Length: 157
Image 1: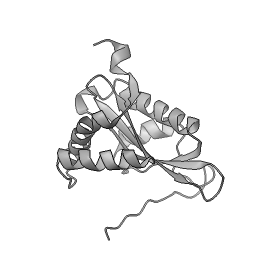
Image 2 (image 1 turned 30 degrees about the horizontal axis):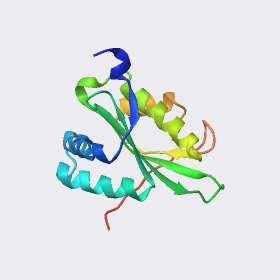
Image 3 (image 1 turned 180 degrees about the horizontal axis):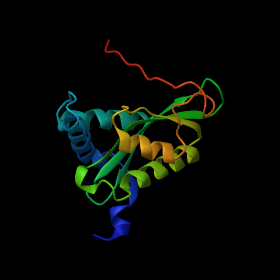
Image 4 (image 1 turned 30 degrees about the vertical axis):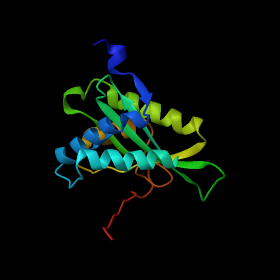
């Protein structure tokens, strides 16, 4: 596989939901998170993508990675906000630039589609992901480098 095809990024379509479901399933099982089966995830992604506020970018020929973007209206500006819901690269393809290529494409896609803000979350133990996000200008500091640390909280309802 050439380097260019290994790092190629494309917008997913409805025909890709099977691959998306498998990648999301692999992501959750790799980190011991509960997950629906790949087919259920594929069907859910089909619905979300059809709704227009969810976009998936696929990376590599496999595909070997994905970025799931969710768009919403902003409170603070007339623009959209973009939430990076998931970023995943299969283990055997990590460290080769695919995650960075997906992130760069996600940022550009979000800008081109009217977003002026992107947020995401990750665990403090995911040092590689944090390093990638920070190298691209994301911060967990409020307002400025010396500002207070931001926290992400979640709860099942």
